[in-house]
Amino acid sequence: MVTGFTAQGYKIGDQRFEQGLLISPEQVLDWSGSSLDQMNLGEILSRLNLSPVPEFLLLGSGASMQQPPAAFRREVEAAGMGLEVMDSRAAARTWGVLRAEERWIVGAFLPIA
Image 1 (cartoon, rainbow, N blue to C red):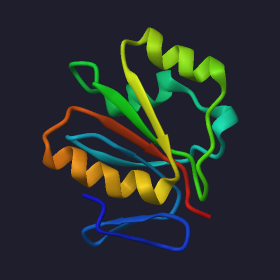
Image 2 (cartoon, rainbow, N blue to C red):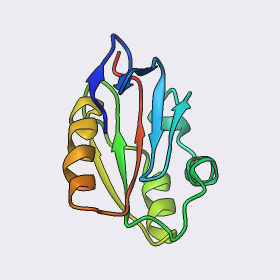
Image 3 (cartoon, rainbow, N blue to C red):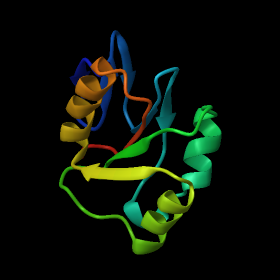
């Protein structure tokens, strides 16, 4: 669970993540994803190495809600997943709610600032 925020990133327990964050039900990783235009689903899924394929990707788009490129959206659909996009703070809060429901999802949260 995301337990707090830093100036640019996230806190999970006592651990700080000052860049972006990749999160699954099994792990949490620093992520240097810098912009929506450079999103790479293959990188996200290979770094998280999750089986079975997640139900959907919860995408935190940074300080404000912005949609990723259409090509990325098509890539997510082709992988058999859904895509939910919101600003990164809202995505981090939503993560906790969805995991409390035991949803099998992954999150990719861009830095907040």
